[in-house]
Length: 588
Image 1 (cartoon, rainbow, N blue to C red):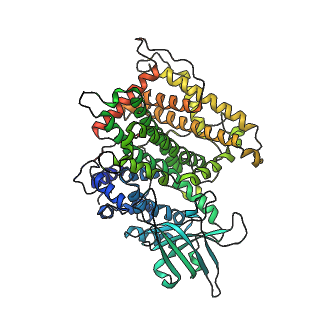
Image 2: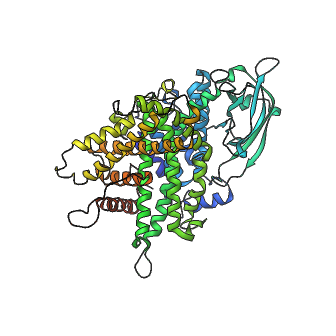
Image 3: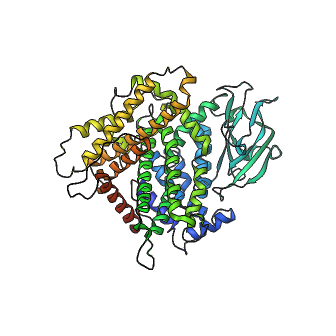
C-alpha cells in the first residue's frame, strides 16, 4: 500500500506544478498572470494543473475520502496559489471550501457525501450568503424560502455576487425563512442545480470587480423554485448560527491568504531595492528603505504566528478558539494593508505598473481588499471579540493555565477536527495566559548563559505587554457584560483593538519559545525576530518603553541589532528563493 504524500510533500508538489513566478517562459508565471488579469480572465491552463494536483481533495475531510485533516496545512497549501493569483486561489478552490464548510458543519450524512463526491470529481460548489448589514450594495440582496403548496420550500429572489455561480452544480443558499427579525430568521439550503427546474433559476450575468479580476462573480435569480425539505442544512432557522459556526473555520485561513499576497509584494519591492544602479548604489543604501523591508518581513512573521494559532486552536482548543480566529482575521488584513502602503512608497511610480517586472505589486495591492473580505468582515470580527472581554477580565486573565505547547509547533501533528465541539464563545483565554507565562519564564531565566545576550530586550518587551494586559483587565473589569451600550462604545472598540495586538504578541512569544526547546530553524530560535516584532507592536500601541542602551561595542541599540539580523534574513530569502513566513519554504 502506497503511503499518501505528507503535508510538506504536497505543498512542495503544488509549488513545483505552478512553476517559477519570475520565469517569462512559464505559462503560469507573472507575465501570463498579469495578462490574464488585464483581460479579466483566469490564466489559461492553470485550472488543469490544479485538477491534476487534485486541489479539491484538500477541501474534503479525510473521513469522506479527501485530504483535509489539519487546518494549518490547508492554510499553507493555499499560499502557492495566493502568492501568484488571488483569482485562481479563490475562484478555483477557496470559494468551494467556503461553500462546503456549512455542509461539513451541519449536513446530514447524505448531504456530506454529495458535496464530497462533487468536489472529488472536480466539480464546484457555490455559496449565496445572506445580506451583511455593513456590506456594499454590490452584495446587499436576498433570497427567501417559504413553504410550498405541495410540500417542500419555494425559493425566490436573487443574489448578485456569487463566486462560480454559473458553473457550480452544488449551491449552498442562505435564505430568509421567517419575516421576523432575529437569530431564527434565516436557514441554509443545499441544492443540486442539476435537479432544479431549469426555468426557475436564471444566471443574471457576470459582474466585474476591481480586485481578483479573473474570478467569476455572477448572479442567480430564483422564481418560485420548489426544493425538497431535505435540502435544509441542520434545522429551519439555523442560518445565523450556522454562518457564525462556519466562520470559525474560514477566519483562520484569512491570515494565510493575505500573507501570501504580501509575500509576493515584499519580494517585488526587495528586488527593486537591491537593484544596483550605474554608480553601484541601490535603494537599500537608504535607511528608510531598509526599515520598510524589515518591517514588512516582521509583519509577515507576525501574521503567520496568528495563522498558526488560529488554525491549530481549531484542533487543540475547540472551546476557546473563537476569539483567536476573529482576532487573527481582524488584525492580519490591517497589518497587511499598512505594510503594503509603506512598500508602495518605496516603489514610487513603479507601484502603479500593471505589467513588467513590478506589475505583480499593483495586482496584489488590488486583490488584498477582496481577499480580506473588507470592512464588513472587519466589523463583524470586532463585534464577536468585544463581548467576551469583560468575562476574560473577571475570570481568565492572570488566573488560568497557558495554552498547550503544541499550539506553537508548526510541524507537530494534530488531533482530528471535531466540528461539533467548536464553541462560538470562549470560556477562557489560554493564549493571554501564554503571554504571562512567557514573561515569568523570561524573568526567571539565567541571562548569563551564553547565547542569551538578546534575552534582556525580549524580557523588557514581554513585561510591557503583560502590563498592557493588566491595564485591559482593569478597564474591562469595570464594564458590565450585560451593558451593551457601554460595551459597544468607541472607547471599548479601541480597547478591543489593543487586545488583538496583545494576543499577537502572545502568539509571537509562544512561537519563539517553542523553538528554543527543540530548534528546527536557527532563525526562528533566535530571539532577534521575536524582539523586533514585539518592539514594532509596542510602537503601534504607544507603550512606554525604557531607553535601551547601546551594546558593549557601542554600535547601536539592541533593537537595531535585531532588526539588522531580520533584514539579513529577508535578503537571504530573496536570493535563496524562500518564502517570507515561519517556514521559509523553497519557491519554484
